Length: 238
Ligand SMILES: Nc1ncnc2c1ncn2[C@@H]1O[C@H](COP(=O)(O)OP(=O)(O)OP(=O)(O)O)[C@@H](O)[C@H]1O
Ligand SMILES: [Mg+2]
Image 1: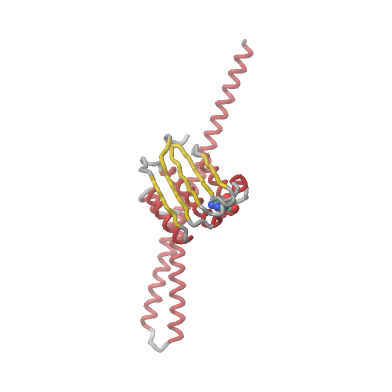
Image 2: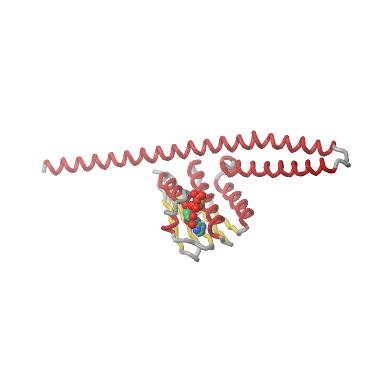
């Protein structure tokens, strides 16, 4: 009997140690993501305020030069027009990159507004029709908002890059004390298990990141039938 209770005790201690390690693993994993998001936020701001501002000034100066040139300097005006166009494109790319790194709207207005922006810009870029439905949401922790935003961003990137879908439906619903984000496309689809093992870091990174917050990733679909991605995460992470 003594031996049995000692075994029970050892088993309990082992379980407690496992749970402690699991909690520590989650804590460290989330800290890594936090550092990465902070770094992205810093880079995004630097791109926008540093390079972006300089390009704005440069564009303005080129415009002034153009105004000052006599009308008969045709060659010089053509060269300036090319420089101005390049400057404008680079400024646009810089702003876009800055927003993708860390959209300020996510920090300023929250997840729903950030998803609306993401859906609009992805629809413009890919030509697909993207519908978004969002339940009325409770107040969400900042990290949870970032997590769901990153999942939606990767899912929409994948749909644009791999699916050739004409229609994508994004839904964010509250369910059983948690949140569910669904991204369904009607594109060429794939084998879910193969997609997860395909060697890309997008889906597997998404799955690991969700797991750190007690969430799960589910993929359904088949070649020719589109892909249905669902990410579920509890409102209060373990
Ligand atoms: N919406 C989709 N429709 C069809 N195939 C998809 C879709 N999403 C993912 N896949 C398939 O799953 C694979 C793995 O996706 P994953 O996001 O992990 O990697 P990736 O997009 O190829 O690269 P990365 O995300 O690292 O830039 C893709 O290469 C593609 O074959
Ligand atoms: Mg991907």
